[in-house]
Length: 103
Image 1 (tube, one colour):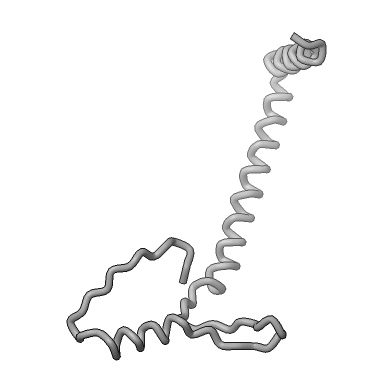
Image 2 (image 1 turned 90 degrees about the horizontal axis):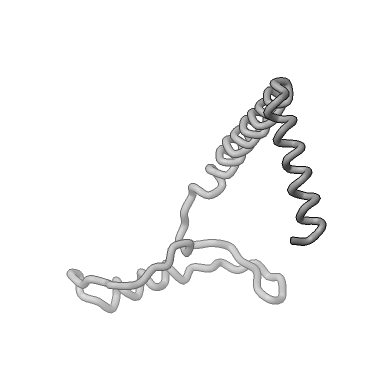
């Protein structure tokens, strides 16, 4: 066992003994834990409500930029739907793999 490993173990033992003997230290640790828990819960709630309106408007068309910086409309899905409408029977079924995270 390395010397630093023994020092870490000794430090842990000292902190553990102090924790066991000191009720005030346990209360302080509990308060810090609760503060972190409440703060993170609030941050998650705020971020969720901030992001919800921004990602809840799905669209089959979107804006993009070309390599030259020109704004272009990306409507590949709409064109694919039109192709299916025009080139397949009305009662046709389409089977495809759709990875999560895409449109």
